[in-house]
Image (tube, rainbow, N blue to C red; front, top):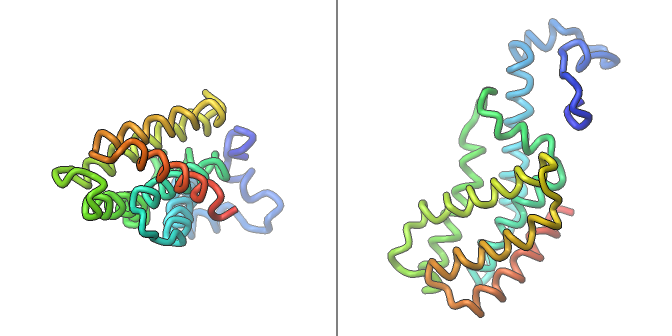
Length: 189
């Protein structure tokens, strides 16, 4: 229903499942609770996907891989991705959502510790900038405003600029980004 952009009704959801609408109200407290549970599942899946990434000796490449795996998750389930960021729905366990951002924070810190990024870089601020940049790109292609092939080169260019503005050498940033991006897009597929 979400994929076909149909109006989602409780009756439509349970039709043919053998489950009553009352059961949905009992277990999820209605449609908002059910959609909130689906939203939660999206963040849980993303957290699992990101937890499967392995750290390498190149933290900037790992940072790019994390971003690409996030993008791949949105590509694989665009309707779920959009639902994940519907703030009007409940999110029973916000820690699952926070786990993906924390992964970015950790990768930025590793990049600072490895002297790839300037020691004055605030890991939380840069991680949020990277997430907001990536999230905006994902929303453009998951909602059909632009195709992924239009978004991807802009994302790669923007990430390179953010890495270099954070102190990384342009050539190293380019190599790390290419490696990490390729690994991340292929992860979980």
